[in-house]
Image 1 (cartoon, one colour):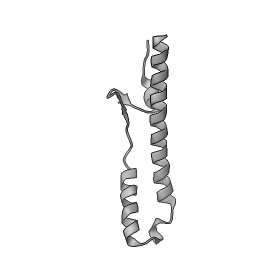
Image 2: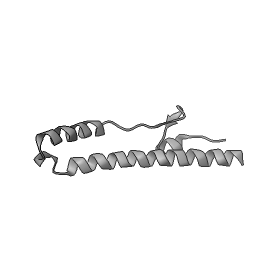
Image 3: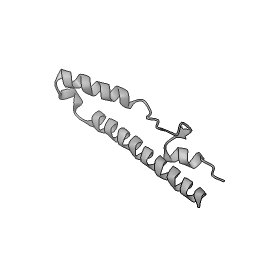
Image 4: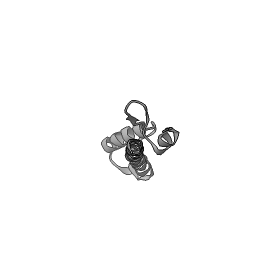
Length: 79
């Protein structure tokens, strides 16, 4: 039972982290595909900051052990 609870907790943690990563990627794609180049210059500078930040991969560490994503969950071995 304890092992099953640990497995469920790990899945829920990585699933939430994956949703945050997906949301971050959607924001980047939406900003990139928008008409950011026709807005005023001061807004373009703010959008440029978002675009630069969006090129980095978002990594959420869970418990300092592994990166929280569904890919990270697949690498967890529970015996």
